[in-house]
Image (cartoon, rainbow, N blue to C red; front, side, top):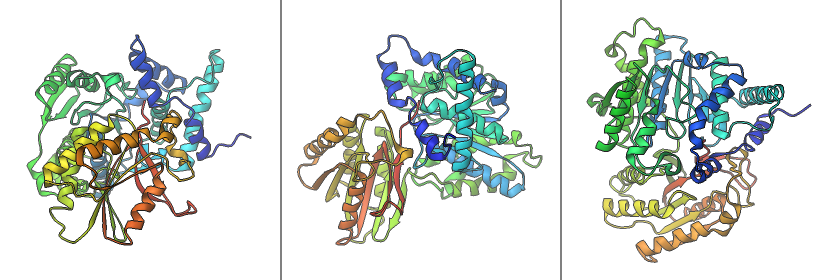
Length: 495
C-alpha cells in the first residue's frame, strides 16, 4: 500500500510547479497565461466534486493587497475567536493565508489553529486521488496537476467545505483579478490593504497596474473596503469598484483603536486593525447571532480580539537568554521602513542597557541590494548612525549539512547560485559601499551556523539581533536537530 503520511503529502506537494516557475513562465511568455488561471481553477474545482456555489456558501471575507494582508487576517481571526468565546456560539471559521512560517499546514486553519498533520494528509490525498481518477476518466495526463499555490487553494476549499466552516477568511496569493482564490463570486465583504510595487512580472511595474489587479476581487453589491492609498492607486480602485458596482469606501485609522495595545507590534498595524474592524462589522450579520445588531454591543469583544492577535514573522520579538531576536519578513522598501521604525523604537529609544547589535539580512531574490539600501538609509535616518558591530548575510539553507526541512523545500531554487554565495557576497560588497568596512561582516552558507555564530557572541555580550528575512524558511535546532526553535520563516511559494 502506498504510504499516505503528512511527510508523503509534503513530498508530493513539493513536486508541483511553484511560484518561481510560474513567474518566469508568465514573464517570458508572449501570451498572458495569467488570464487562464480562473477557468483552470473552476475546472479543477469541478473535478474534485464541487461547484462555485459550494465555495460561495462559505461566507468569504476576501482580502488582497501588497502589505498587511496576513496581519489583517490575523486580526479578523482573533476577533472571530473572541466572538465564539463571548457568545458561546458554535462559529466555525476557516482561514487560508500564505506563505507559511514553518509548516505548510499553517496556511489552512480552522478556528485559528492549523489543521493537524493527519487531517492535512487525509485531505491532500483525497484531492490528489480525485484529480488522477478524473484525469484517467477523461483520457488526460494524470500527472498534470495545479501548481503549488493553486493546489493548496483547491485543497483548502475541500477542507473548509468538508469541515463545515460557516465563515472563511481568504487571502489572495498574488494580485486579485486572476488570482486563483478569485473564483469566489459572492464574498460577504472584500478588503484591500496597503499597496506598493511587488510581483512586477505578473502585476506590472506601476502602482496603477498593480491596483487594477488588486481591485479584481471587488464584486457587485458587495462592500469593497480599502485603507488610504496613494492618489493614483485610489483612483484605480474607485474606478474598479464603480465598474463592478461594488460598495466602495476608504477606511482610515479608527481613533478608538489607538487606545488599544494591539497584539501585533508596529504603529503601522493600526491601519490593518482598523480595516479588520471594518471588515468584521460588515460580516457580523452572516454570523447568525441575533444579539450582534450593532458594533456598540460587541466593541469590547472586538477590542479583546485585537489585543490578543498574533502573527509570527512580522515585527516579532523572541527572547533567548541574553539574546533578543527582532524579526521581520519585510519584502518591499516601504515595509522595511516600517520595520525599522518598530525596531529602533523597541531598542534604541527605550533601552539604555549596554548591548551589542547584530544585523542578519537574508534576501535571495527581489532586488536584494535595493532592500538593503532601504534598511540602511532608514536606520541612519532614524538614529543617525549605523549601530551594528556585526552584519551577517546567510543563504536560505537550513542546516550546515546542506539540507532543508521538508516543509521549506523549494525545488525551483537555483542550487548553483545558492552554493556560489554570489548574492551574499554582492550584499557584503554593497554594505561596505554604504557604510565602509566598519563592522565584522560574515557571509554564511546556512542558517544553523548563522544562529550558532550569534549565540557564540552572546557568551561575551548581551545581544540584540535585527533579523531581516525573506525567503528565509528555517527552523533552529540543537546539534541533533531534535529541539526545534522557530526563528523566522517567510517562504514565498505562491502561485
